[in-house]
Structure formats: C-alpha cells, structure tokens
Length: 451
Ligand SMILES: [Zn+2]
Image (cartoon, rainbow, N blue to C red):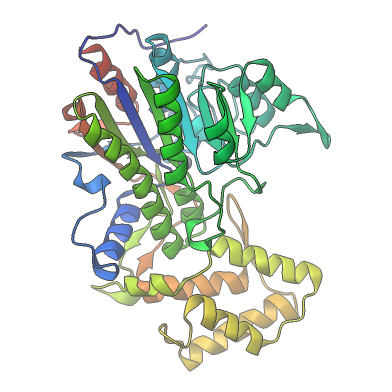
C-alpha cells in the first residue's frame, strides 16, 4: 500500500524540474565555498546557487531525532513524509510512501537521478526504494532495477554480490530494459532510453573527491550535462532530474574543510549546468537547490582565527583527508618504510606545510610525536567516522589546516542546523519562506499542479 501526493497536471506547469541536493551542505559549507570563491579566487559574482532570486531555510529533523540521517531526510525530500533515521521510502509506521519521481513519471515526466556517490545511497534511493534500513543494498538495487527511473548515475552498486558471488543484480537491470554502462562515451553512443551509468574504476562508494584530481571523467558537472542531453533525447517534453552532491557529506564527516570547499564548488558547477539549461528555457524550468542536512557543524571562522579566516590555505591542500588516511592505512598495513624527513617533504608538497602554511617548532614536535605513534610504535589512536577511520597523525595534519584556514567543526556526525534553499524559474516563488524538508516535494508538486 502506498501513501502518495495526489496529482493532476496543470497546463502551465514547469516542464523541466531540477532538484539539486547537496548532501551535508549547510550554510557553513556554502559560506566557506563562497568565502574562498570571493577572497581567494577573486570572483566578483556569488556562487550560482546564491545568485538565484529566491532563498530561504529548511528544517531537517526526522521523526526519530532532532538530528536526521540521510535516509530519513531523503525520504522527506523525496516524498514529503517524516520517518525514522535509517528508513527509506517508508513512513514512521513502515508504510511505503510514493516519491515525487513516481508522481511525476505518472504525469509524463522522464526521471533522472544523478549522484557522485553510490546510486544505492540514501539520497537517490529515497526516490525509488522502500526499505526499513538504508544498508539493504541488494534490496535497494533490486528496487532501482524495477523502478521507473530512466537515467541513474553514480559510483558503484554495493549489493551486487552475496557471499562473494554475483547475485544477478546486474541482470535484473538488463531484464528490466536498463542498459548498464561504464563510461560517458558509452552513454552517448547508446540508443537505449534507459541507462544505469556506473563509474569505471571505483568501488569505494564515491567517484573521487574533487580535490584529489583523479582524472576521472565522471565528474558531477559532466554527468549532469550528460543526463540533460540524454533526457532531451529521450523525454524531450518533460523531465525531472535529481542531482546529489554526495561528497560534501563525506568531507564533512571527515572534518576536512578544504575538501568541503572544493566539493561545494563542484556541486555549484553542476548547478550551473542546470542554470544554463534554465536560461535557454526560462518559462518552463524550475530549479530547487537544498540539502538533506548539515554535516560537521561547520563554521567559517574558529577560535584560532578570531574574526577572520584564511581561505588561501585551501589552495595549498592537494589531497583529501580521506585519501591521505587511506594512504596512511596502506603504509601501516604494508610496513612501508617512511622517515620523518620523507613525510615532511610530502606535507610540504601536498599541504603547503613549512611553506605557505607556517608550522611552529611546537607544532612540528606534536606532528612528529603523532607520526611516531602512528607509523613507528603503532600506539596511535584511530578516530572512527561514518565512512572512514582516521589515524591520529592524519587527524593532527588536517586539524592544523582547519586551525590555520579558520574552519570550525563541532562533530564528525550530522547536526540539526537548518539548511539553505535556493530556487529559480517557474514556481520558484513558492519556496521563499521558512520550510520544513517535508514541504519541498509538496511545493514542487504544487508548482506542477498549479494549486
Ligand atoms: Zn546526507
């Protein structure tokens, strides 16, 4: 049984709807990126999302906590129902709820879901799955295969194997008429109207942090443009597209300020691709930008920087805390020889230490002590986060960057802070007041229905 939002199309409803969701993107994350954009990159214009004519805030609590997780928040944003943390596409009483992707599909809209994390992760899955726990990846994958989604893109599916053996999930996509492809070139050459695009070389749950510059072509802006082209080719009359900036959340959980900045800018570039589409179809397009929750309790400015922050230091960081920590884990596991002098050189080259970022004698002593605890005596602590474990040395390195740049964090989890809402286009004026996350899909459907 499904609860749903009753719909009937209005003649002047927006034909093209973009729902841009920055995972973990609170006002602090947006402002950190904007401060870097203005002060370091010296761009006179605001981020694309901040230039939209309608802006507001949105509350995010779930049915079970003032601090939501991504599953409950995704369910609220997709269907308009509060639910408990970890539940996807079901209401508080475990009743399946329809998402606006289903409602819009019934009204003739093509549906595209794009993310730079896994397409079976909470935010995209909230638009097609109905499961009691977000970790049920095989069931979520089956729901994706049996859904009405026309274009689904992300890093990798996590429910393709059972006891180490392939369990037929890929075949389920094929038997439902969905072609599974691994590159943007394959998508461009495909005649299939329904596509699952997975990243070619990652199994880590995301397509790579923007700051790590892995040369991966499947960046969020590029896949957003690809999705627009695909939808124009196959459902030119109407389409609904959800685009998730999923790595903002990863960087927030890691308390990695510079990586947050680069991920918000990457997401804003994806928004710019939608905005360019809006400029070509201004009377027929609605763009709504928001977040599912805030991650990290992030602030611009912290105790060490007083009434200032120093975003120029973001430029010095060439590696994410996730990638650096993975390198540390690998070195520990493989007993890779590394002297303090060699590590100092790495930090100089990849984080600007002892160069643009000053490192005091005391600070170096602390760093060296944690280096020895992590790599030599192996007595260092490990901080566990949602997506990664951070060795004590890695924690200290990135704490230094945050303290110097002026990025504050209060938690390695989510916070209950409100998130921003930006909107432009047909029906955008509906979004200009304080909303709850359950209001947003209802307002999108109001823009479509006309009442
Ligand atoms: Zn989230």
